[in-house]
Image 1: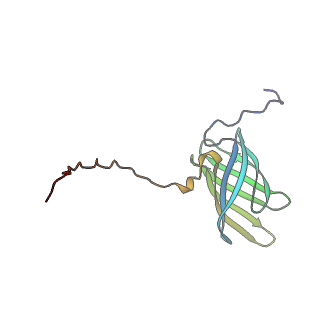
Image 2: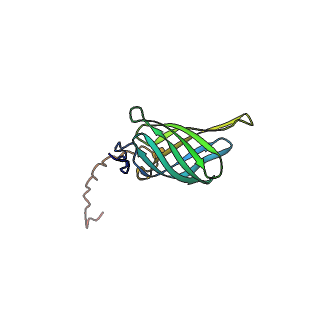
Image 3: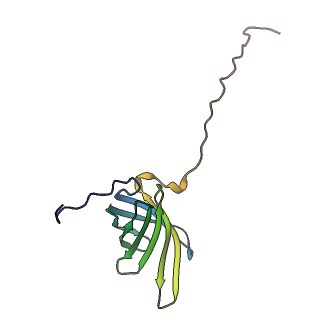
Length: 147
């Protein structure tokens, strides 16, 4: 392969390149904070871009096919960086994020879950059951009977 050729995109179904969606959790601001991402997985490298309520960001990191672990930096344009580490078990990537403010001696942490857009939200799974109803019992009605 020469330097002009790109390695092929990842073929493992856990790491499809393309649109992803998900959310992060932040203790100081309760609720799920949605994010939209466009990710590329190639030869153990994870890159991409996206946006959320904080702003636009770039993604650069790594993933491991053997154990499903992922590590990346979410770099907000003109703002701070957020460090993510997670695990992909086949229903997207979930784990924790961290922002460090060394000059203040403060570290913020929270959780996250992202998944390929076509997968649907795996956090909204529910159980359903079906049953066949018995056939209705036939009843004979006498017509024209007088009492």
